Length: 505
Image (cartoon, rainbow, N blue to C red; front, side):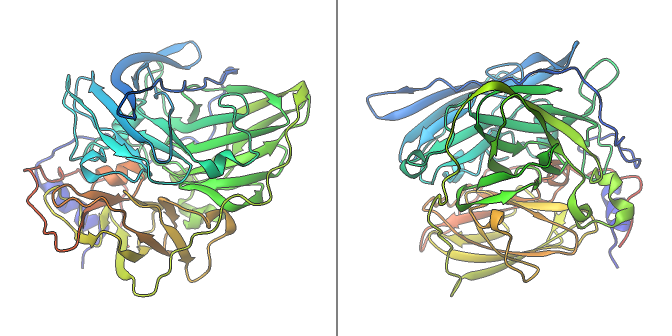
C-alpha cells in the first residue's frame, strides 16, 4: 500500500535535482513588530500605442536591494525595480505586447495568471527566458474587467523566484466596469495590495528555506514590498484590490473594528451584485476587490485573522500550517475631511453561469505532491481538450494537508462545494479555488479559441512548494481535427528529499 512515507522514501532514493532545507517544527505564530511606513503604490507601467494599434509594455527582471524590514536591506528581485513590478493596465479588445528581458543570473519566466492567452505566450515552464535573453508575447485581451497578476513559473523553482520579489498586477478594464460608480482613481481611492509573508535572517535577508508542509511560511507580513504599511485615506470609500501573493499562507482578511465591507469582485472580475462581509479568505493566488467605508479622523487596521474552522484541517495540525496566526496587514488613517463617494452600486455585472449539460467530465485528486497519483512530468501531456468545449471538473483533496487549485487559460465557475452551492462571494468567475482536506469542489469552464498542438497549459496547486514538488499537470487545447505535435525535449521533475515529519494516511 502506498503511503506518504513510502512515496517520499522512494523519491529520496533517486538522484537529487534540488536541495531544500526543511524543518518539521511549525513557524512562530507571533508576528514581528515593525515600524509604520507609508504604503508604496506600484506605479502604472508606461506603454505606447503604435500605428498598428498594439499597446506595448516593457518589463526587465533584475536584481536589487529592498528595505522590506525598516532599517535592514535585503537582496531582492523585481521587474523594472528592486522588488515586485509595475501595474500593467489594458482594456478589453486591445492588442497588447510585453517586451520581457531577463537580467537575472538564472532563467525565469513570466506567467500571466488569470489571463486568457495563447499557450506559447502563457509564461509557464515551457517559456523560460535565459539570462540576458528577451522575448515579446503578444495577445488580444478577450475577457471582462478584472484584477489579474503576473509572476514567474519556472519548473521546480517558482516559490524561490516569487519569494525574491517577482510579482505584479495586471488590471483589465472594460466599458461595463467603467460605467459603474466605483472608486477608480488608481493610488488614491483604488488601491492595489500585494500581500505576502516572509521570514528573515538576523541580518534582514529573506529566509528561503521550507519550514512547513506548505513551504516557506513567514512570520512577517509585507504589503506592497514593505512591513508596517500604512495608507492615508482621503475619500469616504476606498477600493482595495487584494492579492494573496504568498507561496503557502492563507489569509482571512477583515478590519480591526469588525466593520463590514462590500466584496465586488473575485479572481475573474466583478460579481453580479456586491456581497456584504466582515471576513474574506484568500488562498495563494486568489484575488478579491472590496470597497470599505471610512469615517473621518478614524484609524482602522486591515488584519489577517485565524482561518475559520482551521481551513478544514485537524485542530492538532492547524498551527503548523499557519492557520491560527494573526497579522496586521495595512493601517488605514482617514483624514479629518474626506471626499464623499456614493454607496456601492446595488448591481454590478450580469450573471454568466455556464450550462453543464453534455459537458466533458474530468476528475482531479490532490494528494502527496501529486494529482491523480502522478507528479509533474514536463514531457507528459495529461489530457487533450477541444476549443469551445464546456467541461466539468471534480477536484477532491484526498490529503490531510490544505491545497488549492489553479487552471491556466480559464476562468471557471464553482458549481458546488461538497454538494452545496458556493457562497455568494464565490459566485463569479474564478481561476483559483481553495480545496480543504476531504473536500470535493466541482467547477465548470469553457475553453477559449487558443488552440496549440505543441505548447500546453498547466493545472496545479498554487501552494508553490507543492507545485514545485510535482503537484501539477499539463494539457493541450486543440482545434477540431487537430492532432498533438511533439514538444521540444524538456527535463522531468527533479527528485526531492524526504520531508522530516511526513506521515502516512
